[in-house]
Length: 86
Image (cartoon, rainbow, N blue to C red; front, side):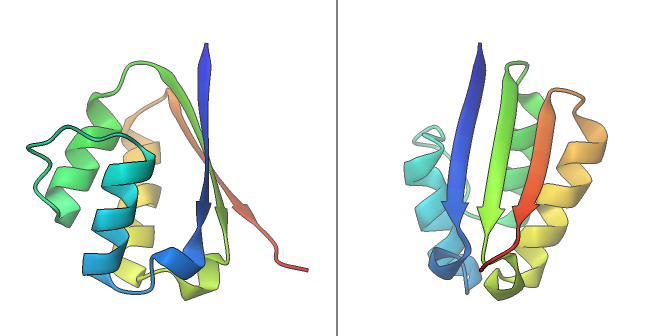
């Protein structure tokens, strides 16, 4: 079963805002560290198939976006798709 998350880039314009949003939407564990290393760990340790759709990716905090890109290279079960805004 593939888990699909459509993430709103408008909710991730700062690092703090992004981590709070991601923890809630992606149901990260309570101990989630709210930083790029913790995000990378959560994204690469998941062995389920995960598809993440990012809209408004041009507004996402650049460190968060980079972490998604690096995690998708590390985890073959993780696919990141950036959606073009109309």
